[in-house]
Structures are given as C-alpha cells and as structure tokens.
Image 1 (spheres, one colour):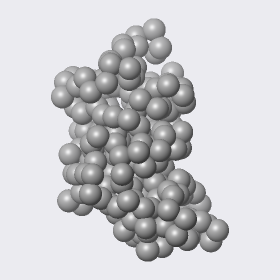
Image 2: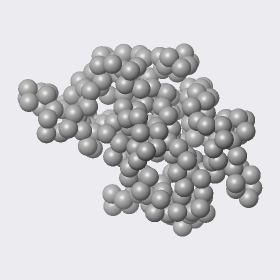
Image 3: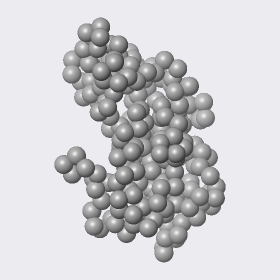
Image 4: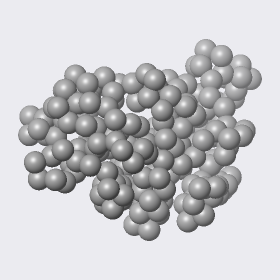
Amino acid sequence: MESRALKITSPMNSKISLKIIPGHFATGYSHVNFYIDMTSVKTRLNEAMEAAKTMVKLNNNDMIVDTIVCMDGCEVIGGFLALELNHAGILSMNTHETFYIISPEYNNGQLIFRENNLTAVSGKHILLLVASVTTGNTVRKSLECIKYYGGNIQGINAIFSAVDTIEDIPINSIYKTADLPEYKNYNITSCPQCKKNNKIEAIINGYGYTKLL
C-alpha cells in the first residue's frame, strides 16, 4: 500500500501535507477509493501547529469556545488550536478563562464522557475537532453525544471533509474534495469495486488502517 502513496500539499498552507493511497478501503459506513493518511499532521509537532494555525482562520472571530472535543487522535492539534484561538481573541466563558481539551470514550460502541469531564461539557460552548469526514455518520454520533451531556455546539473543524455541512453546521476543513478530485466514497451496497470482485485492502478510520490483504 505505502509504495503507492502520493503526497498532497494543502493549498491553504504549504507546510501541511498528507498522503493518499489509492485502492479499495472500507470505513464503518462506506467504501472509498483512497486512504488518506493524516498521521504526520496529527503527530508531528510542526505540522500539528501549522494545522491549528490554518484551522483558526476558518472559524468566526466572534464565536465563543470553552471546550475543544477531539476525535480521531487529534489531541495534539487540539492543544495548539486552543493556543491559536486564544491568540485570535476567541472568547471563553470558563471561570478560569482558559480552554478545556478533552476526548470522549467508546464504551460498548457508545460515546461517553466520564463524570470527571462533565464540567468541561455541560453548558459549555463546544468546538468539535475531527480528522476526517466521509459520510458524516461518526460526526453525527459525536454531536449526539455532546448534546446529550449538555454541550452547545459552536462549530466543526476537520483536516479533511467530503461533506460541507452536518445538521446545518458548516464543516471547516483544511482539505476538501476539490483538493482530491478523484476521491470517491460509495454506499457499501453500491461500491463499483465490490461489483468487480476487487477485495478490500484495509479497514480504515480516523485513527489509521488495518490491512486485510
């Protein structure tokens, strides 16, 4: 797989790049023809910092953020994003005049926040940070979880998104499908590669991939 990887530099910031690998891959809800590897953006100090600098420009300057909820292993970006929001003058209503950076937990397939983190969610203004959005189902689950615990959604930031809005909330992303014009995602029952009996190479999600071949 890795030998087929192509490097794509962000048109918003030349210091940010990701790798795409063409093939036949399965997400939890669809099949896609590219695996988008965001490992370096999420784990390298400089790239995570540049991603945060780019994301902050995509958000409204007048919004209020108390908490950044990080999905898909985006906590490093989340920390830098909090710093950039602070530098940009984004308001926080927290008592300590600072930002919370937290992640939910999967428990028997459900997203939950433990009791010790509830003060960072209940009644707070939440910015959701995700790695990628394909069908939007994972983001919908995240929004449902945040709302269940009393959080107020202020926006959604992503590294890559194939969707413009979810539940009427715009998704502000560094990469869009226009940057990957050949990227396609298909309903599992209508995948053209499956119809050609091409085997799935790997199961993928926002954290990475697991090879099947």
